[in-house]
Image (tube, rainbow, N blue to C red; front, side, top):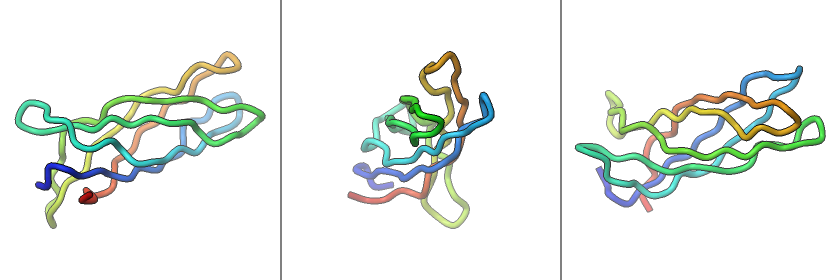
Length: 98
């Protein structure tokens, strides 16, 4: 595994108040974590129903791919805006070396 790498991610949030938001981006470079590593991520959702949400967090540890490389899970909840949140969860892309 290349130490200096990132991952892409893209997903749609859960539905709340009859709408969803898109979110996507690139993680931070790898951060050692036990015998594995994690990545930071964060950003702003798409603008829907006249508002956005912020999100941030850490991925889970590396999940090896049978064909090589690895991915990470990321999940959480957005900021609370207009009295609601959205949950999200997805897997990152395979690693992208920097």
